[in-house]
Amino acid sequence: MSVETMLPVLISQLEGGRSLNIYGLMHHEAEQYENGELFGSGRKALLQLHREFREGVKGYRGVVLDSRIEGDIAYLHVRYEFTESDGQQYSIPGIHELHWKGNMVMREDFWVEKHYAKKRKQLFPG
Image (tube, rainbow, N blue to C red; front, side):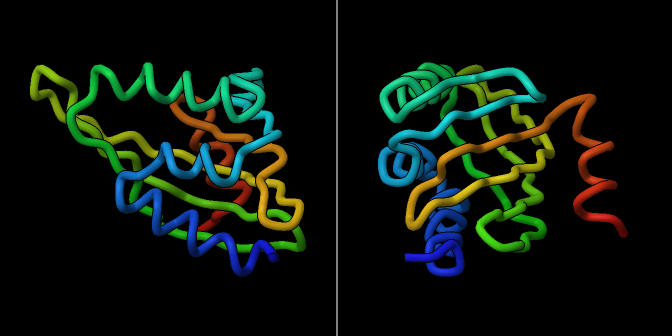
């Protein structure tokens, strides 16, 4: 399968709050980088990291604001919305660059916080 086929599946899972499915189905050998630093490598590690994050969160989903595909790379402009167990709500923007091989993400880079604005200008101007 191609990135054109798999990206809508990934977006559907993300917007439905089913991010654990994404790691379980599409990140078997992936390396994930946050703001240029290695965040996790491989399905097992990425699932564990995201489960730990989800332990303190009551609700979580991503809203995809924009996306595009260039060859085997997909770019997403996302707003994460989540509610912590104390009821505090958060909204954080992010940019993702996903390198695909067939139906699997092999590398994912994402930028949030102070790195977000620069990447947004580069990848989603306007």
